[in-house]
Amino acid sequence: MTQMNKLAAALLCAAMAGTAVAKLPPPTPEQAAAQAAKKAAADAQAAKDKESLLASMEAVSARWRSKAKANGWKANPPTPVAAQVAAVTAPAQPAGAQAKAAPVKSEKAGTAPPAPASGKAPGKS
Image 1 (cartoon, rainbow, N blue to C red):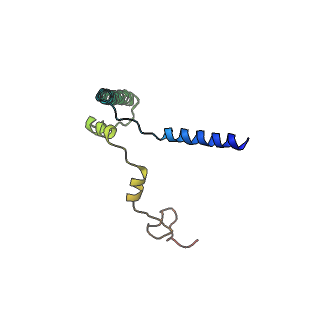
Image 2 (image 1 turned 120 degrees about the vertical axis):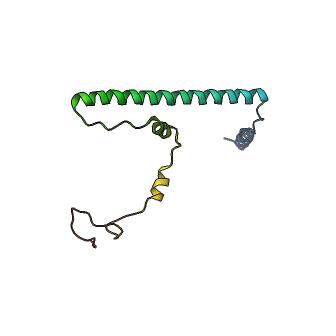
Image 3 (image 1 turned 60 degrees about the vertical axis):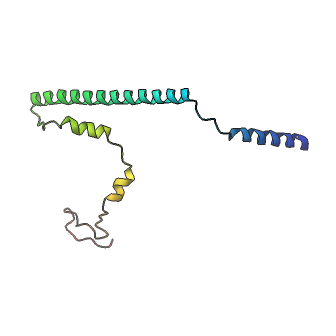
């Protein structure tokens, strides 16, 4: 390429980069209302999906309990529905939050009792 072609290509790239970072105008009131309606519809669908999930969980549980009685299996009493709703609707916690809250116990470090199978106190290996 000649010097002129390289300069033209560089100017073209610079011009395109400038348009790529341009800000969008704020949404019009109609667009904002449409977004709000879309969000409300999505929230309603999510609530319907949660109810459907809970209903299917109850159906599976009831079917298993009826088979358990027929086969002589031990079946504990069912969990109240309110607890299931809380489990489905509660926000998820990051895995790191639980790990940070748990105390660290280790036989090797001496912060945990020896395992029952070993029968020895922790020592250096």
